[in-house]
Length: 161
Length: 272
Image (cartoon, rainbow over all chains, first blue to last red; front, side):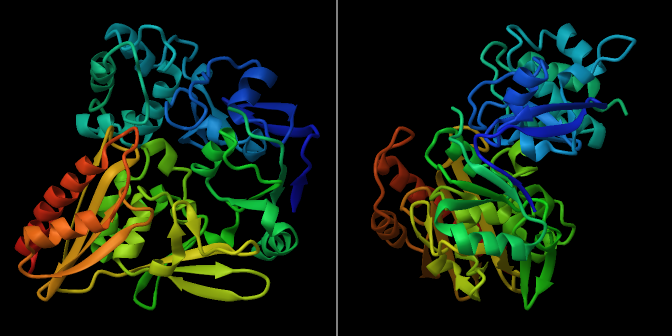
């Protein structure tokens, strides 16, 4: 059994966007805080911290999940993907480029989380229709765009496969 | 919005988890997906001394048909059950209700049994379990017992699980031939907590109507055909309930009457 005592720092290691990373965390440290405070990966944003807003969404072993509802220790040995890993050497990920083209963001606070959800959906269901895209995006709150630009961006990418 | 300090335990098997519960059960919480408990801990509404993480236990990952029911292990996510190929045929009501449980992102981590353990009065899964007359399988070092859904949830966010016990599985009976079902929910946003959720299952003799979001626990009534407005009105009033920031209890009663009428009509029309 793995047993980590409260109030003590424990080593946590996992892969972040394919690279091995490690740091120290108390059991109570949220994965979202670990990413930002221990690893300096500020792409993941922290909003409501109770799983409602979706800003902190990352991919854990490929699945889009709330990093504020995971403890850093629970990511031990797993694969974590964040928005920092989306763009490649040739530039923005197609989803990012579409968000830019269709004004799918304004302040950008919700954008990293939305991109991580859409990236999983695109990997698994590249031909998802608008209803499915809206269903997945219902797990995210955006206070700037009114969502239309986000939907248009997604529709520009999905259904091309 | 940060949790209070706790010891984190990740047992390698169920026996280790039960041993830990036997020693420290009153101050421990089981964490499977953590999609309800994590939020409670972040808000410090839950402050366990020990968090026992069972998400990785292979013996709790199963979905199987056992004795006429779908038995869902305590580490099975809502998404995994939704993707189980037999669900739509074996228990179509559950297949219809699951997409209403939280969001895509929380369903991939949140478990079926965790939602039952959390026992939120507006949650879909406790409503489904109660309406379908399901069961919850509990284990402790002392014993194993099976609790009927009607005896499982004893109040708002309160269950029959003792301090040294944990849920190891939930059982949803298979849909019998000759039945029809319907479900509808009103929430501020799809995936948010239900203001009122109504599910109905019927056969040629009558219909069971279940309501979540009004009383402290999911409530079920058995009605015979034809279902009258009077019967639904009496049911709506019997639920009690209270005003909160989302809706007044008067509005909730109106939803129960209207959705109840619509769904019982759908069930009747769909009967074979």
